Image 1 (cartoon, one colour):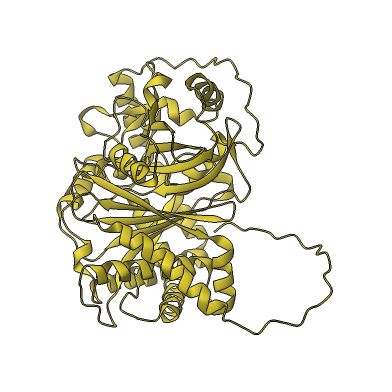
Image 2 (image 1 turned 90 degrees about the vertical axis):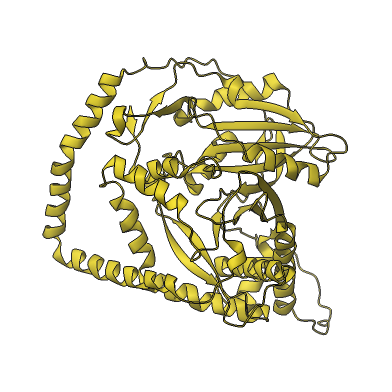
Length: 482
């Protein structure tokens, strides 16, 4: 048995009939889809490294403690591994519609909280894979680590290995309750040790306190600025999903020529996409108009890689959609993010999420459900980056061509954007409410157009340089993760 962290349990309690809190990804591979037995054999060989995939949620009697992870004695791989096919010719529109339907369905809480869908005929000479797993299991970075376990850096099909896994006996309600009460009893002693450690390092404690105070002060800025109102409102259970594409090399060219970081350029592209969306909706765009986005930040250290849980904080960035010039938008984002990084807002966010571990479990559940019912207009969207491998990856001997992430929606936020880098490519996965955000293809086209505009400004036309003798270069280009 393993007790969920306060943050993990929050993602579970956030879920309701219209907000299903699962993350996901859509990957496209070359060649024909693997046969059912072939894919199942590969997945069975990986499950030994993915222990959480054989665990289910166990609730503590009377809600006296946070939910727990226990091994599922009735685990059946066939329930989690699904197969489907797109009607010929299997175009991109049919794939997007399928992803929307799959992601609109909640995961079965009586079983481990994940599914994989193998899609035959996902375009000419391609097949697809939809991965779907609950946010209470992982954050975006650890989800990428789990996907890395599934993929292979070489084009070979691993030999199937015998599965010797045997589940632990199902814990009784009495043992679950006893485990919870034991953890509750040890809590004061643990907090006292933490307090003694803080007293023993007064300078570090003072610095952290100052950073926390500054971060909490910066959060007051969420009450100001003019924001686009059509991006918020009551959610429906239906989902739409579209994708946009970019190249990491283009983003780096823009960064070198126009300034900022890779993340700044990506947020500028998203800003241009939202500007196009709002223009298409006929909204007025005064120069001061912003779209406020939550940008998750990973707090996962190298030692914590591969541990499935949530270790995140966040910044609340302002996308300057009211500015007309794309370079001005990029520069405004760079200035804003530099200020946010200095403000300590991420420190404050981390402290607030850690406090969730101290709150009584019934209060966590009550607070999470209350948040999902209260209308809010201060946060319009979420933009999350997931670094992927920068070398080709394979599954069942087939090369992965592209990957696009999926981000869930909640708290009256009707549109979310997730970005994944892979082998020099950038995949933007855009989630929209299926009733109130049917125009998200305009956002996708706007992102691609913004990247093209910034690249044009970064590489102005110049007279051709005089011809020189060609020499063989000994330099090797290197790709860095976002």
